[in-house]
Image (cartoon, rainbow, N blue to C red; front, side, top):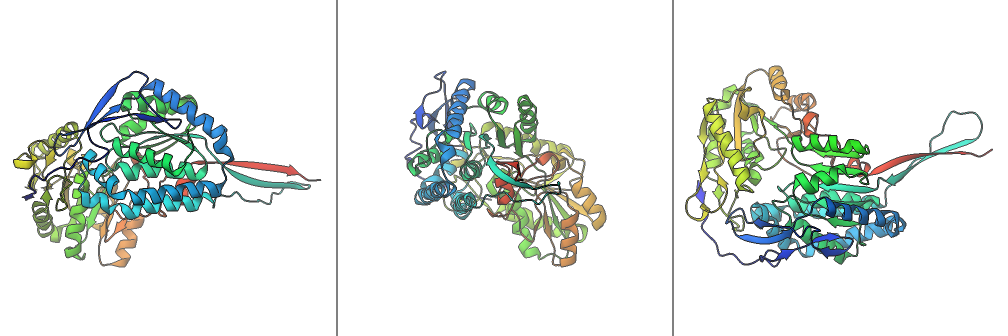
Length: 498
């Protein structure tokens, strides 16, 4: 495994160690409590910024601002104007994309090649939602009642949206939440992850520069158990849009009961990635490896349960292990880096515990299996890309979400039994199928209980294609027309004309 060398760090203009306030009602303000927290580069331990630490009182202020905007000037802004604001924001994001990519990399560790590679997706989402802003409509419905009664529906914004995002892709996650809110005429209070709040705050600056009115977008950094919990339970929030762990998702559902607010949840996964013996193995090796190793495994839909047909199991798993050993590990700001650090000490400890668990359960680490601490990696949270062979379905490493660069390779022989085993998980977010047999691809794709099935590829995403989960991976969809519908209410109107 190659380790990139230490590289000179140029201070990012937004990560210079200074203090960052929260955005409420178009103003940059301190937390009501005066509290602050620090955010650090997970590759080097360097202090990037101190950030205002929001709690319940700050959430109250932000929700009140969002409500005033929603019921006031924002309610009179036409779809064409909302579209124009989103297009202007997209232009600003495009202008500053290199800066935003570097900020994502510094705050949560992803390789700069990955954060730069999100360009098409991030800009595509903003412009897709801009297009949707002028495409919202109800329908006329011919009813069967006697007399002359005209019936139709209206699509109306749900109201104040509380958005809570994780740290594993701050720029894209922020756009994924505020884009549809602006398009539909909602207002939003965003609580970014405490591990990586800087990109969300910088994007909020660009929202103001784009002319988005005060109170429409509010950003309150803070911790989940304080700011996040206050947002989820707030009686004047009409909807929660959450991405994160299933455990937190369950808490949000309970907290939403007070006013029966709408909830959409994109939660965790333990996704099966299935390789048949007839697959193009030369394509499947890097595809299956990076289905997990990308972003250091910190992707909810990562294909962490690698099912390989028995007749090619040893060969294929060996090739994936060799692929993992050759990946460049290092500071994400180095363009040659392929694997960056985990986001925090807590996450590194969690992944390290699972590495120990896997070996104790009898799995064999044919690649990786430990932390990296040599040279330039000594101050960061680096874990080797790991491939466990001889994994059994009931092992914890095959059932529990690790959220690290860890593959559990499982063999299979019978296709029908395989589908049952692949579906034998509490999650249902992503899945992959590698085969050159078109009939088999369709058959297995239909049988898998997951929100996305990728055939001969993995993790393909597009703003027009919905993404979401089955079972404990949540409900609701992001991207596509279904995403916009999550931010709308449907009103039926009846008019007796005679």
